[in-house]
Image (cartoon, rainbow, N blue to C red; front, side, top):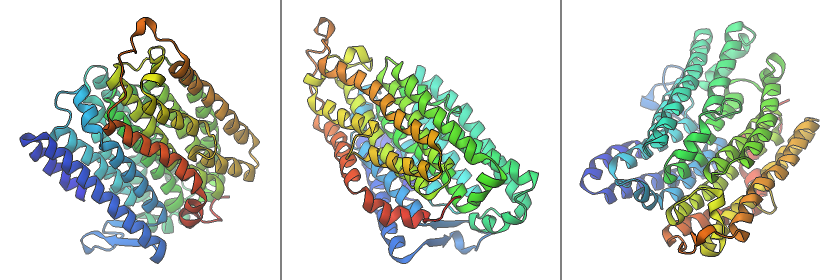
Length: 483
């Protein structure tokens, strides 16, 4: 609620002074982070939290339902967003004349309201409402850059609307068969009608719609241009968290609405997700290697990394799903670090072309150092956090006796190393043409410090991953989930 109210306040104050809108944005997201941490501690100690909006009991009323998984994802999303937003005013001011004004701040807060709403709702239709709030805000943020960004935002809008429509049609079919929109109530009633054609269609529509929202291969067409042409502050915000929340929504469907056996025995959804996940991992890595713009390289890298989450869901066992959820956190931190570093490069050097990054390792050692840590974590070099989510996915693949999935996960590290080392070689050992980078200086502290916060977090999360898994994710997913 605080980001939603903050959006209105920021829009009003922004007309008077842009800095006030920026302050409201940070305060609102900071409050959401504090609330998320508080409720995570509460559910770990005392069990799940349910709140009935307006006092109306389900299935008539809308329920907010928070368990360890939703609380954990809320902490990740709000924490990453808060750190990214700290330097956003400087990045936006460099690319847009009114970068820190009320309209931008308001849309950012609407995005955060939508994302946190998706995470905590226990109602299928209410999830759609928050899905559209977040999506509309994301379309606007991408398009605000003008030019190619506007075209990319429009394409994102068209495909995102199709995804939302698919999800809504699926929810309508569930309501038609069960008479309820409450997730827990629907899960109780669905076994009686789960073999009907209507429910089969509902599951396919919901999976397809959320797959399109999370840019699951081959439904990823909106993502490369959106990430590449959006302003740097926008890319650094939406790339780490938006698609991860949509991936969480897909996980929530199979944890709280449809029984695990449904996606393995009734419908071959798990098999489809495994195939698409493995294909997406390879496709995204190959396409990332082919790019000459570092933003597009990171965009295709995101397609590959999102495919890991789909693979973890499709393997349909607890270890694989823990790996998928862990990768939501790890990839959010890694991609935030990398896109903030790229934003600093664009601000200081005025380029995102990989060939023109030659020698910047000497001119921007702090920024490039953080970028290197992010690259190593993406590859999966221990003790970085990126290693451990892949480790759990490999264990899940072994548990499912899916050796092809295990092989693809291992090969993916080699593919990731290839395209990242191409960039690192240019940064540290490349010779600038015509000395165009000799006048480039290190980014200001307001940009370097948040980037290094993420770089340090990657190592720290790798070191404490066992505590995250045993203390939170084991309770959220349980040892016996899946087949």
